[in-house]
Image 1 (cartoon, one colour):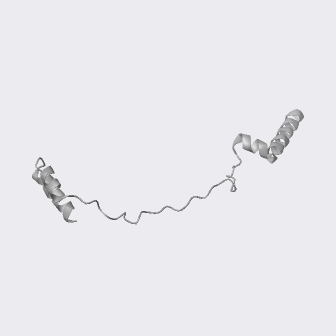
Image 2 (cartoon, one colour):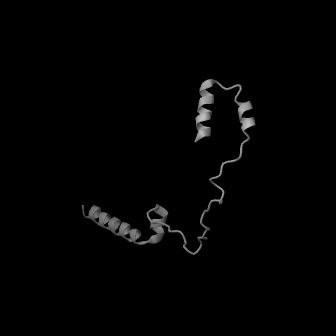
Image 3 (cartoon, helix red, strand yellow):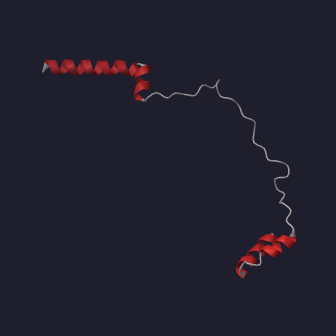
Length: 84
C-alpha cells in the first residue's frame, strides 16, 4: 500500500513540474501563441471611389428593344425598377 501512495505522490509531483514548463504547455496546446505585434503591417483604410453611387448610362432605345421577348410581369417589374 505504501508503494502505491509513493507512486501517486511521485506522479503528482511529476505532473506538477510539467505544468510549470511553457514548452510542455505549448506541446499539449494549452498555451496561446500571440501574434508578434511588430510583424503586423498596417494597411490603408478602404475607400470608395467618388462616383460610386452613380448608375451607368443606359440608352432608352436599347432597353425597349431588349424587352420584346419578356412577359408582361417581367416588363412591369423592370418598369418599377427603372422608375426607382
